[in-house]
Length: 110
Image 1: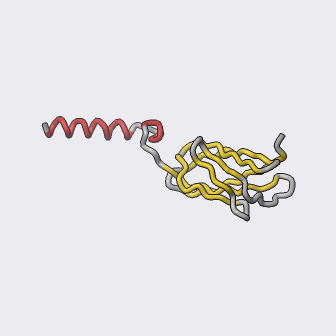
Image 2 (image 1 turned 135 degrees about the vertical axis):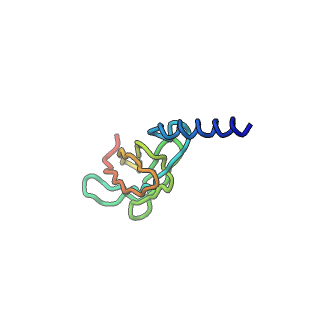
Image 3 (image 1 turned 30 degrees about the horizontal axis):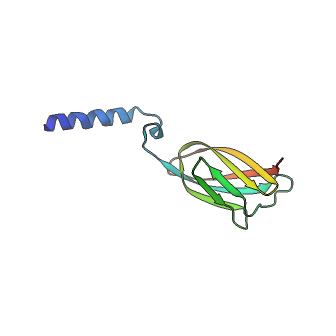
């Protein structure tokens, strides 16, 4: 019985060591991202912009145009920002257990 348990554990650990992206097997790792939204035309901050990443996280920027997402899944992510009359997107590869900054230039939306 102990041998079977030890063998199963060893097999499980061996399969994890060969995995280049732990998120692909359901082991989530996260990083933090602070987003700054600004008008592309003059660089001024966009307060109150709704910034989303993935399908479940959306937060509003503060008066300085900043918002922090404390737990974003590691790997490639698309950040989308919207405010009345403005929109913008940016791509970022989120680093596990790291903190990153991202600026989104917002332009007039159609």
